[in-house]
Image (cartoon, rainbow, N blue to C red; front, top):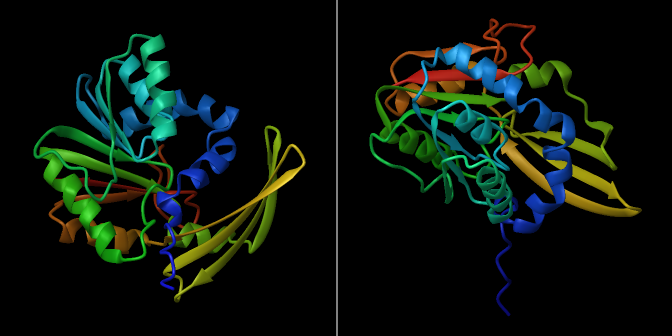
Amino acid sequence: MEEKKRTPWYEDTEFWQAVQPVLFDVERLRQGPVEVDQIIRLLDLQGGERICDLCCGVGRHSLELARRGYKVTAVDRTKRYLAEARAKAEAESLDIEFVQEDMRAFHRSGSFDVVLNLFTSFGYFESPSDDRRVVENVCRSLTPGGRFMLDLMGKEALARIFRSRDWRRVDGTILLMEARVVDHWSAVENEWTLVQDGAQHVRRFSHRLYSAAELAGLLQDCGFGAVQAYGDLHGILYDEKAERLVVIGRK
């Protein structure tokens, strides 16, 4: 009998439903407007730009950008997340276009001034060629001079703080985390055990790790000109004290 092909974790609807309480807890949702302030300053947005929030999740950045008058297209492959974001937008009469599509497939030639990919929503796929396809699609979707902002945990920052086992409490959920670096620091494999209402749910996922130089090189190979790296959304230097890796490429 032929073995049934297993659905990759990033295409598993149940995975995204299970981890939603820890990905989008009350404090993280509260930080949305603060992070939008930082994004506006770092990109020096003037108002009215056409922005694509690629992998928008439940819309914590898309909603806030629309409140401030930006023209927002919010893209995600998870129907549940988009439904929640759409309901909030309708409740506030916000004009946001919501698109359910895989980031490897979504592109619109010359349609956006800015594309955002935030909160480590990059590097999910088994093949590096899929990451390249995403960046090429983004470059194609930007207007001349448009910018692509990536926010993720950089390889250098992760190496400094890496713990193979950790835990935290998120609202009413206890999260037990195990991680393993693989393939010469090119990827990390994760196992999360979520304890909710006395029940345990184990979820496994992995993602590719990028250094600042590797990610900047990928953007330049895909058609971006000037590329800058920062240590967080405030725009600090990407050095030994960096907490995140924020890369901005200009088409």
